[in-house]
Length: 249
Ligand SMILES: Nc1ncnc2c1ncn2[C@@H]1O[C@H](COP(=O)(O)OP(=O)(O)O)[C@@H](O)[C@H]1O
Ligand SMILES: [Mg+2]
Image (cartoon, rainbow, N blue to C red; front, side, top):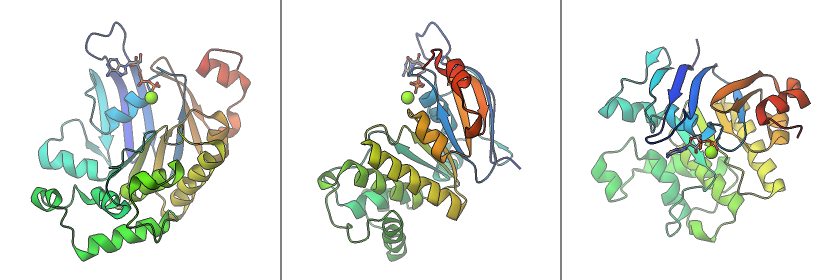
């Protein structure tokens, strides 16, 4: 069964003249590594925000594991979001806090609000956080301040924070756009390794066609709020790029 089904998703932001998404259909099977390409403004970020229920679509369906995710509220919405890890272009770490504290924030949805507020996590949570840091190649960095790390290391911390959620889906909104090309490739390789070893399904927005070709098991091209291409990376050729980006490239 599909992990996630998106049907007829239509989004219009308040005050906008046009829809940001104009009927997007998409099915994700468990274990896929999907990269979403498309020019600025195509709707890549909006798609991710809809899936995570941060933006309310005007119409359409989001079905998670066979259940309607659009109706979820309160504790059910929290439980849904726990299953979805997020990584961002800007990392979204708390710079003044140590790396370990940042990773533990991934457990936020699991502990009680007062525990989270006073930063009280149990030994099991701390053990998981340390394991996640080792997994992303940052064993020994637990007590370093986030602000003292390089961009690539900061994104690794953010990936560890998402992993301690024990997610079933990882959403990435251009997670390598702020990194130099060598570091960007290393982070994509890490995500691909996690995808293969853990079977963690990935939906990653990307700026770079080359990285999508190198790491995705499937590429989706968004153009002006619509799916203009959906297929294997081997089929992403010049004419597909013209369809998606609207130029000869
Ligand atoms: N918060 C917002 N309010 C109004 N319009 C928005 C907002 N966010 C995005 N948009 C518009 O929605 C469209 C899709 O944007 P976005 O999803 O950010 O595209 P992408 O991530 O592919 O660059 C664009 O036309 C953009 O200007
Ligand atoms: Mg975006």
